[in-house]
Image (cartoon, rainbow, N blue to C red; front, side):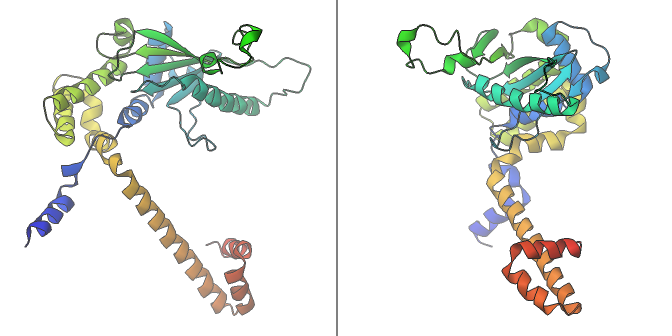
Length: 307
């Protein structure tokens, strides 16, 4: 066996050898940790200074996919007349208010449709009040609390001689940025243990990387440390593999997407072959010929045969 053969074998047996941190792992982990209503309610109470007890008071409204933007938001929910959008960021992004505007537009449209509100009526509709919180745990230095405004993105050069047009602009969206790195927003961390543990876990990964450990080893050591010290211990014990996959494996996203496309092609070919066989068995030769030339007619036949 040659050296190259040995390397290929090791890569197959130990795929983590060349793994890197998925740059979006903090976003994935944030959504994972706050996917249950109980944890999300705890976070809301900590941020808002409220003391709600019943998780069923909270209605999840997270957008799974805003198709025309190709973006997903982290967590959004409705409670006590408040429409909350919670996002996680590990890098500074001054455009968050614009993203928030798009998200709120979609969520409010869904709310109007769900409640069957008539926006063309002479009667005023009642809408929930939007609140936008961004949880930041990147490495840049930010204050405990800051704000990003949509109006800060408006063209400074537009009609600059006509006064402060920003003040009179038709739109505004405010994103409140909370720094959740170690030592910041301590009171919020005390009230929401999951958020504090999340921040501590991310910090341990950074520390092990700074010590020179590669990404897979840094993640493994951080998980071991957190379990031993009661930091996300139950979550990490029960979901160690899933959390590790979340942090490391998505780095090979191109391969994953290529695999999905290939599987899709194989499934498509299987359906078409099955259709051709059924048409031949039923002696529908004219339909078979037309199906090869007319994709819409082919889809009708696939539905007819329930393929």
